[in-house]
Length: 298
Image 1 (tube, rainbow, N blue to C red):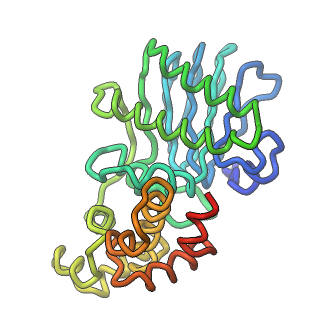
Image 2: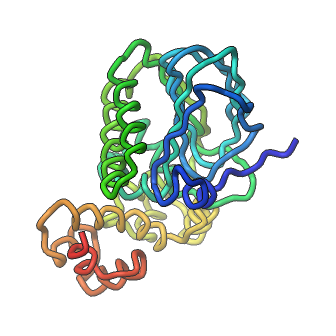
Protein backbone atom coordinates (compact mmCIF):
# COMPACT_ATOMS: atom_id res chain seq x y z
CA UNK A 1 0.00 0.00 0.00
CA UNK A 2 1.32 3.44 -0.94
CA UNK A 3 2.12 5.80 1.92
CA UNK A 4 0.13 9.00 1.81
CA UNK A 5 0.85 12.56 2.85
CA UNK A 6 -1.01 14.41 5.60
CA UNK A 7 -0.27 17.92 4.43
CA UNK A 8 0.21 20.97 6.61
CA UNK A 9 -2.28 22.90 4.51
CA UNK A 10 -4.98 20.27 5.14
CA UNK A 11 -4.41 19.90 8.89
CA UNK A 12 -4.00 23.59 9.74
CA UNK A 13 -6.20 25.22 7.11
CA UNK A 14 -9.09 22.82 6.62
CA UNK A 15 -9.63 20.77 9.79
CA UNK A 16 -12.01 22.88 11.86
CA UNK A 17 -10.54 22.25 15.36
CA UNK A 18 -7.07 23.36 14.19
CA UNK A 19 -7.93 25.95 11.55
CA UNK A 20 -5.56 28.92 11.51
CA UNK A 21 -3.43 27.51 14.36
CA UNK A 22 0.29 26.83 14.06
CA UNK A 23 0.18 24.10 16.70
CA UNK A 24 -2.57 21.51 17.00
CA UNK A 25 -3.31 18.89 19.63
CA UNK A 26 -5.36 15.78 18.93
CA UNK A 27 -6.18 12.76 21.08
CA UNK A 28 -6.70 9.03 20.70
CA UNK A 29 -8.76 8.51 23.84
CA UNK A 30 -11.85 6.73 22.60
CA UNK A 31 -11.00 5.11 19.32
CA UNK A 32 -14.14 4.47 17.31
CA UNK A 33 -12.05 4.61 14.12
CA UNK A 34 -8.71 2.92 13.52
CA UNK A 35 -5.57 5.09 13.27
CA UNK A 36 -4.52 6.12 9.75
CA UNK A 37 -2.45 3.69 7.66
CA UNK A 38 1.23 4.26 7.03
CA UNK A 39 1.71 7.92 6.20
CA UNK A 40 3.97 10.94 6.53
CA UNK A 41 3.61 14.71 7.07
CA UNK A 42 5.29 17.91 5.94
CA UNK A 43 5.25 19.13 9.56
CA UNK A 44 6.62 17.90 12.90
CA UNK A 45 4.59 15.47 14.96
CA UNK A 46 4.91 14.44 18.60
CA UNK A 47 2.83 11.92 20.44
CA UNK A 48 2.75 11.06 24.10
CA UNK A 49 1.46 7.80 25.55
CA UNK A 50 -0.67 9.01 28.45
CA UNK A 51 -1.95 5.57 29.38
CA UNK A 52 -1.75 2.02 28.01
CA UNK A 53 0.39 0.63 25.20
CA UNK A 54 0.72 0.81 21.45
CA UNK A 55 3.03 -0.32 18.68
CA UNK A 56 4.78 2.00 16.28
CA UNK A 57 6.75 1.59 13.08
CA UNK A 58 8.86 4.61 12.12
CA UNK A 59 11.05 4.63 9.01
CA UNK A 60 10.84 0.83 9.02
CA UNK A 61 11.82 0.42 12.69
CA UNK A 62 9.40 -1.27 15.08
CA UNK A 63 8.80 -0.08 18.67
CA UNK A 64 6.55 -1.11 21.52
CA UNK A 65 5.50 2.04 23.36
CA UNK A 66 4.02 2.38 26.83
CA UNK A 67 3.00 5.00 29.38
CA UNK A 68 5.41 7.93 29.51
CA UNK A 69 6.96 7.43 26.05
CA UNK A 70 7.27 10.64 24.01
CA UNK A 71 7.92 10.32 20.27
CA UNK A 72 9.07 13.18 18.01
CA UNK A 73 8.92 12.48 14.27
CA UNK A 74 10.54 14.61 11.57
CA UNK A 75 8.69 15.77 8.47
CA UNK A 76 8.55 13.31 5.54
CA UNK A 77 9.36 10.26 7.70
CA UNK A 78 6.82 7.47 7.24
CA UNK A 79 5.19 5.89 10.29
CA UNK A 80 2.27 3.76 11.35
CA UNK A 81 0.72 3.56 14.82
CA UNK A 82 -0.94 0.31 15.91
CA UNK A 83 -3.30 0.49 18.87
CA UNK A 84 -3.16 -2.22 21.53
CA UNK A 85 -6.24 -2.34 23.77
CA UNK A 86 -7.53 1.08 24.84
CA UNK A 87 -4.56 3.44 25.26
CA UNK A 88 -4.72 7.19 25.66
CA UNK A 89 -2.42 8.96 23.23
CA UNK A 90 -1.99 12.71 22.71
CA UNK A 91 -0.73 13.99 19.34
CA UNK A 92 0.89 17.37 18.85
CA UNK A 93 1.36 18.79 15.33
CA UNK A 94 3.71 21.74 14.72
CA UNK A 95 4.28 23.64 11.49
CA UNK A 96 7.87 23.74 10.26
CA UNK A 97 7.67 27.52 9.97
CA UNK A 98 6.64 27.72 13.63
CA UNK A 99 9.68 25.73 14.69
CA UNK A 100 11.77 28.12 12.58
CA UNK A 101 10.33 31.23 14.16
CA UNK A 102 9.80 30.41 17.84
CA UNK A 103 12.37 27.71 18.56
CA UNK A 104 15.35 27.77 16.19
CA UNK A 105 16.66 31.21 17.21
CA UNK A 106 17.39 29.84 20.68
CA UNK A 107 19.14 26.62 19.65
CA UNK A 108 22.89 26.41 20.04
CA UNK A 109 23.58 24.01 17.20
CA UNK A 110 25.87 22.06 19.54
CA UNK A 111 23.56 19.33 20.79
CA UNK A 112 21.51 16.42 19.52
CA UNK A 113 18.12 18.13 19.71
CA UNK A 114 19.44 21.19 17.91
CA UNK A 115 20.63 19.02 15.06
CA UNK A 116 17.24 17.30 14.84
CA UNK A 117 15.21 20.50 14.61
CA UNK A 118 17.72 22.53 12.62
CA UNK A 119 18.13 19.88 9.95
CA UNK A 120 14.53 18.91 9.57
CA UNK A 121 13.21 22.48 9.51
CA UNK A 122 15.14 23.42 6.37
CA UNK A 123 14.91 20.24 4.27
CA UNK A 124 13.17 20.77 0.97
CA UNK A 125 9.61 19.62 0.31
CA UNK A 126 9.18 16.15 -1.17
CA UNK A 127 6.19 14.25 -2.54
CA UNK A 128 7.47 10.96 -1.17
CA UNK A 129 8.64 9.86 2.31
CA UNK A 130 12.35 9.83 3.02
CA UNK A 131 14.93 9.49 5.76
CA UNK A 132 17.27 12.26 6.83
CA UNK A 133 20.11 12.95 9.21
CA UNK A 134 17.87 12.30 12.24
CA UNK A 135 14.43 10.82 11.59
CA UNK A 136 12.91 10.53 15.04
CA UNK A 137 13.51 10.71 18.77
CA UNK A 138 11.91 8.50 21.40
CA UNK A 139 12.17 9.50 25.06
CA UNK A 140 11.02 7.52 28.06
CA UNK A 141 9.73 10.11 30.51
CA UNK A 142 8.50 7.42 32.91
CA UNK A 143 6.27 8.82 35.64
CA UNK A 144 7.29 12.44 35.05
CA UNK A 145 4.01 14.09 36.05
CA UNK A 146 5.12 17.51 34.84
CA UNK A 147 5.27 16.29 31.24
CA UNK A 148 1.64 15.17 31.25
CA UNK A 149 0.60 18.34 33.07
CA UNK A 150 2.27 20.56 30.46
CA UNK A 151 0.67 18.66 27.57
CA UNK A 152 -2.71 18.87 29.29
CA UNK A 153 -2.24 22.62 29.69
CA UNK A 154 -1.67 22.98 25.94
CA UNK A 155 -4.73 20.87 25.19
CA UNK A 156 -6.90 22.96 27.52
CA UNK A 157 -5.60 26.18 25.99
CA UNK A 158 -6.49 24.97 22.51
CA UNK A 159 -10.02 24.26 23.74
CA UNK A 160 -10.43 27.92 24.77
CA UNK A 161 -9.84 29.02 21.17
CA UNK A 162 -9.90 32.78 21.71
CA UNK A 163 -7.79 35.61 20.33
CA UNK A 164 -4.94 34.76 22.71
CA UNK A 165 -4.82 31.00 22.15
CA UNK A 166 -2.42 30.92 19.21
CA UNK A 167 0.22 33.07 20.92
CA UNK A 168 -0.09 31.23 24.23
CA UNK A 169 0.25 27.81 22.57
CA UNK A 170 3.37 28.92 20.70
CA UNK A 171 4.95 29.98 23.97
CA UNK A 172 3.83 26.81 25.76
CA UNK A 173 5.28 24.51 23.10
CA UNK A 174 8.57 26.42 23.08
CA UNK A 175 8.91 26.12 26.86
CA UNK A 176 7.87 22.46 26.70
CA UNK A 177 10.55 21.60 24.13
CA UNK A 178 13.30 23.32 26.07
CA UNK A 179 12.28 21.53 29.25
CA UNK A 180 12.45 18.24 27.35
CA UNK A 181 15.99 19.10 26.25
CA UNK A 182 16.95 20.10 29.80
CA UNK A 183 15.59 16.91 31.37
CA UNK A 184 16.24 14.29 28.73
CA UNK A 185 18.81 15.69 26.31
CA UNK A 186 21.53 13.45 27.68
CA UNK A 187 19.31 10.62 28.89
CA UNK A 188 20.54 7.09 28.17
CA UNK A 189 16.90 6.15 27.54
CA UNK A 190 16.74 8.41 24.50
CA UNK A 191 16.66 6.59 21.15
CA UNK A 192 16.97 8.02 17.69
CA UNK A 193 17.31 7.03 14.07
CA UNK A 194 19.23 8.85 11.41
CA UNK A 195 22.18 8.84 9.12
CA UNK A 196 25.41 10.76 9.04
CA UNK A 197 27.34 11.93 6.02
CA UNK A 198 30.29 14.19 5.37
CA UNK A 199 28.11 16.46 3.26
CA UNK A 200 25.85 17.10 6.26
CA UNK A 201 28.76 18.85 7.92
CA UNK A 202 28.41 21.74 5.49
CA UNK A 203 24.94 22.57 6.76
CA UNK A 204 25.91 22.24 10.42
CA UNK A 205 28.83 24.60 9.85
CA UNK A 206 26.54 27.14 8.17
CA UNK A 207 24.12 27.06 11.11
CA UNK A 208 26.90 27.73 13.57
CA UNK A 209 28.52 30.49 11.51
CA UNK A 210 25.63 32.00 9.53
CA UNK A 211 26.48 35.57 10.55
CA UNK A 212 29.85 35.60 8.83
CA UNK A 213 30.33 32.56 6.61
CA UNK A 214 30.57 32.90 2.83
CA UNK A 215 30.37 30.15 0.24
CA UNK A 216 34.05 30.63 -0.54
CA UNK A 217 35.00 30.30 3.14
CA UNK A 218 32.81 27.23 3.52
CA UNK A 219 34.40 25.47 0.56
CA UNK A 220 37.89 26.36 1.81
CA UNK A 221 37.10 25.07 5.31
CA UNK A 222 36.17 21.64 3.93
CA UNK A 223 38.83 21.63 1.19
CA UNK A 224 36.34 21.27 -1.67
CA UNK A 225 35.51 23.39 -4.67
CA UNK A 226 32.90 26.12 -4.48
CA UNK A 227 30.86 24.40 -7.20
CA UNK A 228 30.86 21.07 -5.36
CA UNK A 229 29.90 22.71 -2.08
CA UNK A 230 27.09 24.62 -3.73
CA UNK A 231 25.68 21.46 -5.35
CA UNK A 232 25.64 19.60 -2.03
CA UNK A 233 23.75 22.41 -0.28
CA UNK A 234 21.17 22.52 -3.09
CA UNK A 235 20.74 18.74 -3.06
CA UNK A 236 20.21 18.60 0.71
CA UNK A 237 18.00 21.63 1.25
CA UNK A 238 16.51 22.60 -2.11
CA UNK A 239 18.01 26.05 -1.55
CA UNK A 240 21.16 27.71 -2.79
CA UNK A 241 23.71 29.02 -0.29
CA UNK A 242 22.27 32.53 -0.16
CA UNK A 243 18.68 31.29 0.26
CA UNK A 244 19.75 28.99 3.09
CA UNK A 245 21.50 31.83 4.90
CA UNK A 246 18.32 33.92 4.70
CA UNK A 247 16.24 31.00 5.99
CA UNK A 248 18.42 31.00 9.10
CA UNK A 249 18.77 34.77 9.51
CA UNK A 250 15.11 35.73 9.15
CA UNK A 251 13.71 33.83 12.18
CA UNK A 252 16.51 35.33 14.27
CA UNK A 253 15.62 38.82 13.07
CA UNK A 254 11.95 38.23 13.88
CA UNK A 255 12.84 37.21 17.41
CA UNK A 256 15.07 40.26 17.93
CA UNK A 257 12.36 42.60 16.67
CA UNK A 258 9.76 41.08 18.97
CA UNK A 259 11.74 40.61 22.16
CA UNK A 260 14.38 43.35 22.24
CA UNK A 261 14.62 47.11 21.84
CA UNK A 262 17.58 46.81 19.47
CA UNK A 263 17.59 49.33 16.66
CA UNK A 264 17.01 47.93 13.20
CA UNK A 265 20.47 49.03 12.12
CA UNK A 266 22.00 47.10 15.03
CA UNK A 267 19.93 44.00 14.26
CA UNK A 268 21.07 44.06 10.67
CA UNK A 269 24.76 44.14 11.60
CA UNK A 270 24.33 41.57 14.38
CA UNK A 271 22.99 39.09 11.82
CA UNK A 272 25.79 39.64 9.36
CA UNK A 273 24.15 41.95 6.82
CA UNK A 274 26.46 44.43 5.11
CA UNK A 275 24.07 47.31 5.69
CA UNK A 276 20.53 47.98 7.03
CA UNK A 277 19.13 48.51 3.54
CA UNK A 278 20.01 44.95 2.53
CA UNK A 279 18.45 43.62 5.73
CA UNK A 280 15.22 45.60 5.22
CA UNK A 281 14.95 44.46 1.60
CA UNK A 282 15.47 40.80 2.51
CA UNK A 283 13.10 40.99 5.49
CA UNK A 284 10.32 42.42 3.32
CA UNK A 285 10.89 39.76 0.68
CA UNK A 286 10.70 37.02 3.34
CA UNK A 287 7.81 38.29 5.50
CA UNK A 288 5.98 40.65 3.13
CA UNK A 289 6.43 43.75 5.34
CA UNK A 290 9.35 45.86 6.54
CA UNK A 291 11.00 45.31 9.93
CA UNK A 292 9.48 48.56 11.23
CA UNK A 293 6.00 47.56 10.11
CA UNK A 294 6.45 44.14 11.68
CA UNK A 295 7.58 45.56 15.03
CA UNK A 296 4.79 48.15 15.09
CA UNK A 297 2.14 45.54 14.34
CA UNK A 298 2.94 43.46 17.42
